[in-house]
Image 1: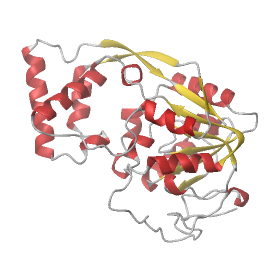
Image 2 (image 1 turned 180 degrees about the vertical axis):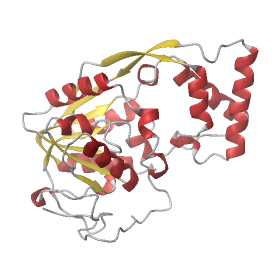
Image 3 (image 1 turned 135 degrees about the vertical axis):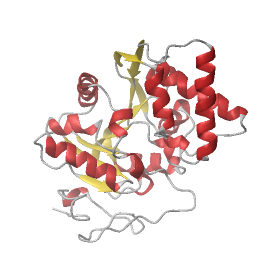
Image 4 (image 1 turned 180 degrees about the horizontal axis):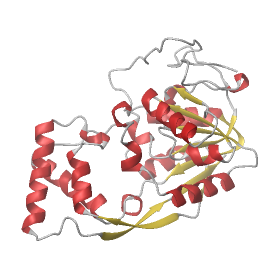
Length: 303
């Protein structure tokens, strides 16, 4: 067994690992070593670890249905790797079923949260590693399925991450990538509309959102098909939720979305103030439940 950084990164099969000379993970136990960051770095979610599941979590039944889709799309006994595993919102249901899932993420606090959730559920520690998706510390052709759920837009060198995913994927393997279709994944309720209207206000204030990684769904899918992948659309997981404007304006106030972190705080909150004023002028009841339909859509890209 290979041990990384004491608590985070232990319980990994040695045959599963291969460390690049420039990999951000180390084979040493004991004192943690923070990854070296380039001037333009991928976005790590250290600050989001404590609230991530409250703002991005999926209903339990949706998580289980999604695990059904992922499991069915991979070969029996598949070895999974998830890039940007975070708090395990996608990987944990598979881990609970006894599937082999190696989680990779830049954020130690997010990985610790994942392991704490597994422990509280009475499960063994899931194998995790703090590493960069552009330099995956695993051998060539050593996994059967790679999961990518809304990660590549956070990685400046995202095409390098795509190449790494292809490198570690065994022959006949599959990439399970979440589609980034905003109106379907976010719905057309206050969750999505609050962010859209706030973004429009920020634009009026002269704020332009910084593009970090992949721009959208077609770009990501095209990058995988250029490497020889064949796309198969899995059956969507669909659910209905009741949302309120009050809830999602509060989310904006707390700046939980990563695209808010580089915007000056005073400008961000001025945008929220103006949004509140607009809604008040429109007579919107901020506490009224708004039924909203959302979807998780996965593309199985087979090689």
